[in-house]
Length: 487
Image (cartoon, rainbow, N blue to C red):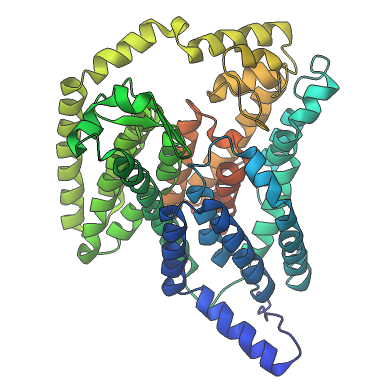
């Protein structure tokens, strides 16, 4: 029998009472809606930097007064989503270096004052394997100077994720007196809605700035006018796959976030017939992905969407929900087919495949093969400067291949293939071991990020994507085993 966990409190009775009231408040939906409203206001007034300061200090407060890290998740996601328009803003945010002091102080206090025994699950060893791969990637080829330039990614994807796992896992093992399944679903669901708000705000902001010259219909159709301008912090490019939309610079990130959050409304809809209306939300999210103009989001998000629909139809226990699920799946498939042919998406996709060598990603894929041949064991490292001839990343970023497989084989060679292959194996194995509707939804959330990583950086961004994936699997490991698998 597990020893009952008793949450530490300050010895001063009045201070302890304040701590308890704040802890309870941080767990309410009201708190999340207030965070949503605050984030929306910062975005609406173009004060994203001020928003970062506000939410960082709020997270520091939560870490100080609460022994639970889950309430920090939504404010953290609000920060990550609200700054998506702040592209190439390294020089802006580096000025906020002083925020590191309250954050580090709060983190140290939290994990010392509320310390719990270290718990290691099976997916941790996959993180260790990746740590080895990214740490020695490019050994013998990459210069010390370039290696140090990529240190954020080397440390973040490796040792950093190991530390994140240990800290998150140790806290999640505590049995709470609330339904943490529902709490986590609410957090991810609301974060999805906030992501939708972010893109709508981008459209509204820039339509207002052009409303004296363009009608709403012209704004959506005259892509060449938008494409010639840089408005605010958002760069616009003509979309090559969704003709009547504008491809925003932040479109790929918007889509990646929505693919992380998309499965959670399906979990709500599975709970009862009265909650079937939640099935509207994934359609809304797909609409936002379409408006983002992200080719990867449209393709991979569409795949995830149909997988979620099928999974919902199979897993829901209610007969009405099952028929609704299969019916929606059929209608959505017909609608997707119509849209694909109406806008010539199939033709464009085939053309992209046939002329892959002319696409930047095609050239990067060829580069990764050459790098692998030249350095098959360790690759050329994740800061390989050769990538810059095809894609020059912004200040502080690594050499992006924008595709997971070429990134691994070109940057880390056989060691990387083994490390990432083992990590994927440990993750899939845990989903199978502990499979239930909740685990399925978390697994589909991971699948969304994994799919997007095939055509964008995705999981190679330590914060927030890979840290959120690590958190997903730390939560999955908390579920009871259903199937025994021999190691």
